[in-house]
Length: 81
Image (cartoon, rainbow, N blue to C red; front, side, top):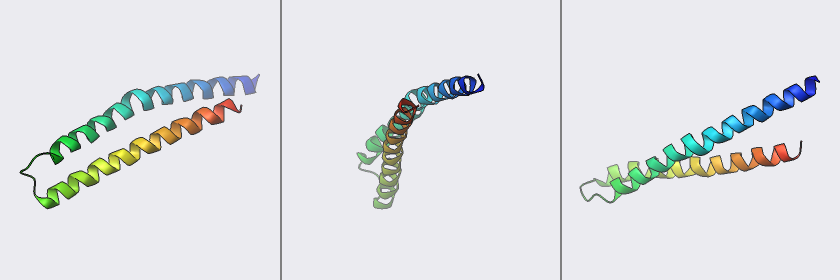
């Protein structure tokens, strides 16, 4: 009985996290990537400013890729239960 309750709670938590990851996190990160790309197209940025914006864009892309991997790992691990 206790195991079923724990599994149900984990399932609810997993669903909530995956919704947040797919709806909020990924949307926000994609907006950051898009905004950084727009900034990089501006001719008035100095080279050091462009470097900083590239760093921001690359960091956001890495986070997005990491979130994809995490999502896959969570889905794969729950399939095994």
